[in-house]
Every structure is written in C-alpha cells, then in structure tokens.
Image 1 (cartoon, rainbow, N blue to C red):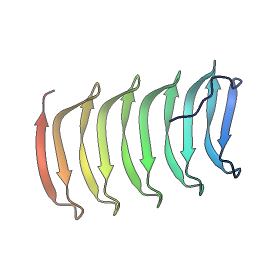
Image 2 (image 1 turned 90 degrees about the vertical axis):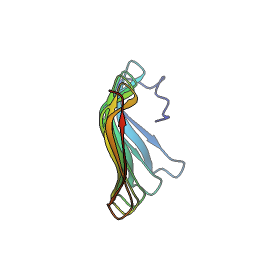
Image 3 (image 1 turned 90 degrees about the horizontal axis):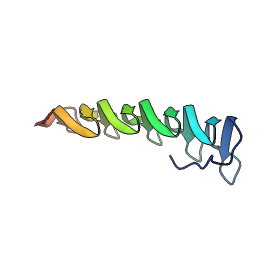
Length: 126
C-alpha cells in the first residue's frame, strides 16, 4: 500500500485523509513499515490488513470491499504471493481459489460463478 513512512520516527504511525479520518495505521522501524498494518476507506471501513517486514508483504493479507465483505485473502513470502488464495464475488460467494508458489499459480485453481457453482478448473504447473 502506498504510504510513505521513510521520514517517520520509529514507533506507531498513523496517516489521515484530508478530512482527518484515519487512512492507515501501523508501526515504523528504520523508516520502513513493519508489523501489523491496517488501511481504511474514507468512510472508516477497513480496506486491507496484514503484516510487513521491512516494507515487504509477509504472511496473510486480507482486502475488503466497501460493504465490509472480503475481496481477496492470501499469503506472501518476502513480498511475493505464496500459499493459498481466495477471492470473492461481491455477493460473498467464492469467485476463485487456489495456491500460489513464489508468485505463480500452482496446482488446481477453481473458478466459481456468483451462485457458487463450479465454472471452471485449471491445473497449473507446480
């Protein structure tokens, strides 16, 4: 997420929209995002949350829709998608699910229509 913390002091960090509402919160270490971070929409709804290590995505991240429902969720290793991933339709039904291996789709990926029925499946090289 695009938040410049390069000149921020170590410790808790908050960024606010022009109207004063919270846009982002997390910790800064040595001018880099580190630890758990949350990002918000202007209305205060959670937009995304996850962990950074020295400004790089690590572990599980979740992105949300404006209505609070999940948009996508998955893991990162050193800023690269890795592990299980799921995306959702705006009605809350799963859109697709599968695994990433070092930034590339791997193994079986299943795509669902908005009613939850399987639309397609594809096997990607591991």
